[in-house]
Image (cartoon, rainbow, N blue to C red):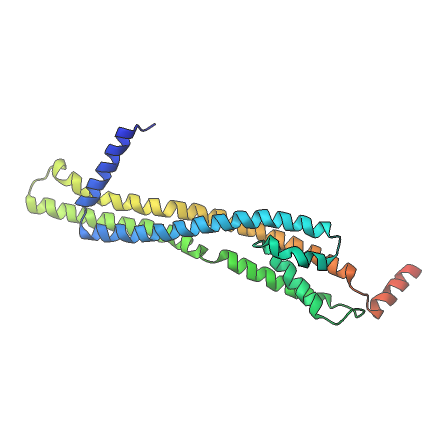
Length: 241
């Protein structure tokens, strides 16, 4: 375990190396800092939102099943379970269900199914928003940091050639300062890659839950919908057999 004095000394050394770096390295570090700030804002906001969505989805699903097919009762309380994606799927399907012909007329189940699919697709798109920035950050920031390192090493060896002193003591500070940009690039990229993979896995799980809930909603709509004459004749034929 690193002691506080050692940690302070390490921080001071890093600060000195950054101060010794050239203007190109400073530009690279500023760019990496910008990437890191934006990435962490996305990571924290998405993490908070996904936790709420997961908790509210479980509560909404329990409320939906407790209603025993009374879709109007579910609609009356659905607003309090947002931002659960299941609420959007339910509202999309239920709105289409209500929009159809009045009571006593057969319902168009395929239209409800399409409304459920559209709502699910919109939720997936919203959940995936801003995540490409994390993928981009994880892909390019190590190379941005490497560019700063290569440039710093070139600059260090040029200074060594001009001084004419081919010693490790002469070149080491410049190389150490140059390597800071590679470390900064990795420090920026690693959390972004981890968060991107974690969140994409969670989005796939949300997608599966929305698909399952959509089927459950369609079954409920199908049971509550009045039967068309053709379906009633089909039921009579099956019973006679």
